[in-house]
Length: 312
Image (cartoon, rainbow, N blue to C red; front, side, top):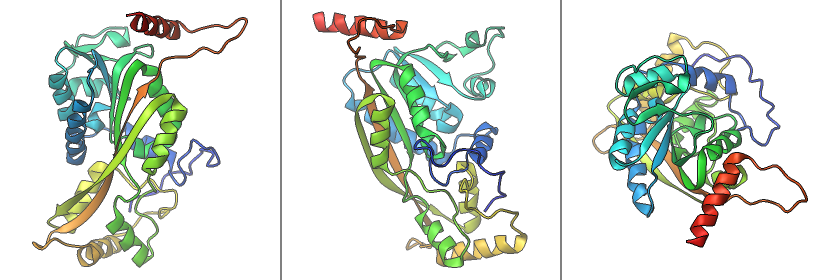
């Protein structure tokens, strides 16, 4: 559907690489400026917020990973939902995020001292939080295990991760159309929810809970459907068409969507999305017995906190 990018340099034999996902195309999409958070991402975030009721102890510090993509409205709702907690953000484009969250803050030659308003600050590598929030990100991550391990390093013992992403049954109607017309794939294959549970454990999380739901969006026209998809991402499949598509093919695409995709009784086009939700806790650190060993300061702090809780 979109122009191809240079070949993916990632070793596809690596167990931490999503098969068929073009990492170069993903990186280009991730670093581009987005005008607003997609509506679907905000909707999914609102459903994630409802799941905070499952937790008896809410965090006193939380980290929102890539708020522009995950949802600026969701960030505000998180702030309201956790009024006594301090919020951090992590983003590739920090200045853009801070300006969207309330205007640029005071300049400092120390990056992590840049703030836009009370309660919002840029996360440092050594920051530890009780909740890491990552909405609709993992389905376009070429090395998900590497990212999950990075998240685990930010979550303190007893804290938890909440995430959402698209599942493999997303865009099924569009995939059927592409297969029928011999156009290849409209998107890469998304990771199954059962695999996310395994990856969470490998990354250092415990007690993972992963489930899914199907959301069907409706559109007044093929053009409206394509406009929505352009906000959600691009075709990151390594098997996508390797050149530029012409206007003639675009007309065929629009005609195909109008003719083949299912419709509601009111005549609106339908496109389904499988949304995966997950959460997992960061377990207490454990040390293996050895005559001599070095322990990171962060791990020692967690061990001491765990000891105090046990003693109490």
